[in-house]
Image (cartoon, rainbow, N blue to C red; front, top):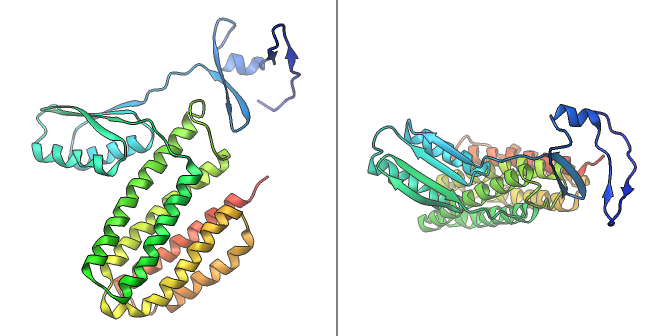
Amino acid sequence: MSTNLRRIQKIKGGSYIVSLPSDWVRDNGLDVTREVEVFESSGIIKIRPKKDFNSERVIEYTDEETAEYLISVYYMQGMTKISLQSKDVISRDVKDRIKMLQLELPGLNLKEETFNSLIFEVDEEILKVQDSFFDFSNKALSILKDVTKVIETPREDMKQDLTSRCLALNSDYYKLIRSIALTVQRDDKYKLDVPIKDIILYAVASRDLGRFITHTRLLIGNIKQEDMKLRDEILLLINTMENIINMFKTEDINMAPRIRRNAHEILENIKSSSESNKELERMTGYALALMDDAVHKAVHI
């Protein structure tokens, strides 16, 4: 259906009306007896056929890995009730490991348990996407800054602390992706705090930042005394990430050439094929992906 202009009319009582395109009414199987939902989203009035949302999912248990994977997926895509059911008894060890997901997925709570089932419910609280993305980014940057201290003094307790902080950031990632999914799918219920185009790019950037954090954690685990020479490259990567975060805020794409030069310098300075160097190379690649996300966010019609 092409865009067309329609005149707003005022009726008795002070309300305003506008006619609906007949093609749209027919295509959606509507008539004068049906109701439509009318709501505002990002300053736009939206009209759609009345819709019942299904926010519950049932998983038929086949194996532990698939069950954990699907629970995580349904959580991130906004389900409020997730049931795991089996035709046979689920072993105590398996159930205990699956219940550990409550520590990873914020708001996931076990509500009922039987011999062959687990039923989880999820709190409906969601995050403001833009604010949460910057909070997520700053935590990742803080970890990266502390990596330089571990390189200077590669103590096991410091490495364990940073590894724990990286794993904790996974929870922030899951909650952020859930908030994005709910905000986009239920814009009638949750107010968009940024334009829909930016929501999409924040989702892509959150994925790239999540992978950056994963490789940061792997880098931390591989740091050895002889990796002292990596410190300069990490400092350059910190500067690069600071510029990328700033670009997301200011939408100044003139920063892109400098960011690319920094990234290329890091990659050129990585000489050996040690595990820590490989992880730094991957982190730099995801930093470039984040820069690309920021550039795309800055371009508007």
